[in-house]
Amino acid sequence: MNKGFADIYFQPFLAKYPEIGHSYLLELKYLRRGELNGQLLEAKIGEATEQLSKYAQDPFVQATPGATKLRKLLAVFHGWELVHREECHAEHVRR
Image 1 (cartoon, rainbow, N blue to C red):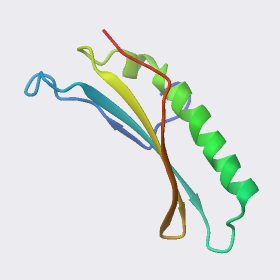
Image 2 (spheres, helix red, strand yellow; image 1 turned 90 degrees about the vertical axis):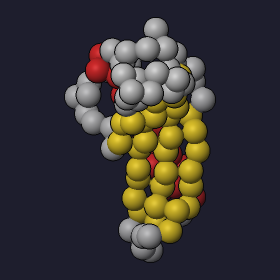
Image 3 (spheres, rainbow, N blue to C red; image 1 turned 180 degrees about the vertical axis):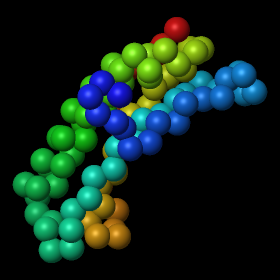
Image 4 (cartoon, rainbow, N blue to C red; image 1 turned 180 degrees about the horizontal axis):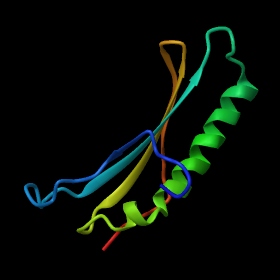
């Protein structure tokens, strides 16, 4: 995907479920135990947000058939603990 890959892309199976209104990009980031601080967490969130925006513009994602709203999600883990999650709210509707 555009010189990089999203961690997970949930492409809707519209042939079987035409009523699906959403598709999803999920970017996961990881901080090792003992690495957690506010500055590093913000850096990981910023990196994930930039990557999701780039992946959303990828021709493969843009070519998804149907008119689904693309939901861009990110999660940051500190070891096994989820320390941040959010949805990036830039609108992307493909037709």
